[in-house]
Amino acid sequence: MVARGRFLASLEAACGGNCSLAADTAALVVRLAVDSPSLALDWATDESYSLQVAARGSQVTAQVRAATGFGARHGLETLAQLVAATGRPARLLMAGEARVADRPAFPHRGLLLDTARNFLPLADLRRTVGAMAACKLNVLHWHATDSQSFPLESEHVPQLARHGAYSARETYSARDQAELVRYARARGVRVLLEVDAPSHAGNGWQWGPAEGLGALAVCVNRQPWRSFCIQPPCGQLNPANPRLYGVLGELYRDLLGRWPAGEVFHMGGDEVFFACWNKSAEVVGWMESRGLGRSQADFLQVWGEFQERALQEFDKAAGHLNNSIVMWSSQLTQPGVIQNYLSKERYVIETWVEADDPLPRALMALGYRLILAVKDAWYLDHGFWGRTRYHDWRAVYDTRLPGDRAVLGGEAAMWSELVDGAALDARVWPRAAALAERLWSDPAEPSARAEPRLHAQRERLVRRGVRADALAPAWCVHNEGECR
Image (cartoon, rainbow, N blue to C red):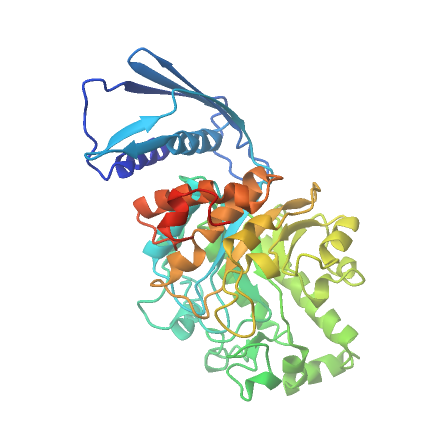
């Protein structure tokens, strides 16, 4: 029903909501056939579809057949792309004959949104999900928490949002979280929730001493920040405090109740700053009591033990051991280290290295499944702060992933240091649409061949209320190929 409504809305948007009826108007009949009633949406979901369009007299018939409802939804999106508006008042034109057999090259086609650096209202998340669905992206990676803020409300641990949110209005209630998951799934998009740990955990975790639980985190908001973390404000969970794990377990129990059973969960795990733990008398004293020193190997052991205990709490909250866990690449995932701490059967590694970095292939050789967030092409925040280079849509499109079954897919990342709801759309779109085509069909052709399609898709997004950035002067759009 949602897919049908979106299809009709896209037709209405194509003619500005005012399509004329002419004497020679043809009827459009759309028939959907879905082989399986399953609503499971995961890396194994069959998203393939076929589409046949045929004109006979005054009727155009479009037949969409798919293995699942999610594939049928993609078929309707493709059908909508075969429609164009012309004239004033507008009339809709569409292809009279078409045959399409389509399936994604990668099962994981994602976009990361960061709601911790700057809060994004639920309406912005919903609008982004709608744009993702229009482009056949299927995973919203929700980087919900960080050391700056903790906006997720938890019934069993309300202190996290109470002490960690920017304000009482800048939170996501339990209802908000569950509603976003439902809204996204109805559009063929999974929500991959990330609660970063043990690093990137400061504000929201500082209430432990006042409630008799001791320090749940150390280095919180410490200055000078360069001595305690990668980016201000600082904060890192305290592995020396055994009460920490009970708090994590209660948090996981709340969150898991709002997501489908067995859904993948992202535990973060990047940029652990050993100097933070090394400057904590409690952590160092605890390590010494266990015969550990202060070497990198010792801190890796502490980190690995933290991850093991956090996973135990997660599994206890889930009631089973089946959820795949995603973690960022880090010191803990280096080829000579990872097998000591992270099982390849349980963990998926999201690498955030540059395209020519050998790490992904080294991890594949060890048998790990991967998601690639190619740092020098798919980090959409680059070019707006620091000494980073802006990655335009061509860089996004021309970056290809290894053709290996271990590679589940990839993600564009919209970190929000300099992004809020007012700037979100133009920073993400249409570059994320270029990523969507790369991950869906993985074409061999260069970006120059894709440019007309991206112009058209950008216009569709704008008609759907997404304030996507312009790609070129209008003259270049109207004179295809003349501006290359």
